[in-house]
Image (cartoon, rainbow, N blue to C red; front, side):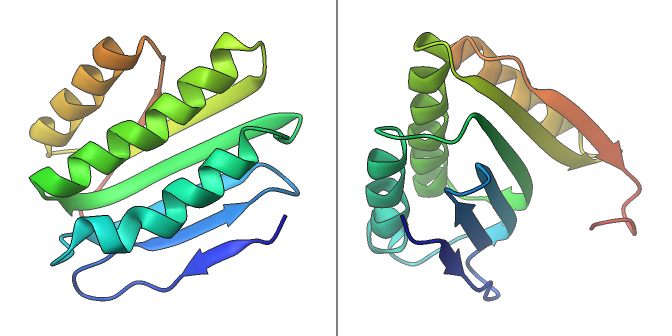
Length: 130
């Protein structure tokens, strides 16, 4: 399965999906003008990945902000991880947030409740995005 890599723009996040080692990264801002068009290849890739996942899947969400339409697709990504978890595959979800961004922390906790997944929540100083 091919690696999917989407470069960041001022309105869209950097996305790296690598089936070989099971790593997935979403990083930056997600405010695309057409979220469906932007996320369509991501969801298609994930639909294929869950058929033959890596031994362990590591999802890292390091988003500064995202709009309502992006939140729908973030939930879709998390549902794919939930599917893996339900089928006894190892997974890790890391949710990165600025240490003073309590709204983003609350959002992570809401996604945990909605999906039943547990996230590793990691805060960093505002100037410390990696």
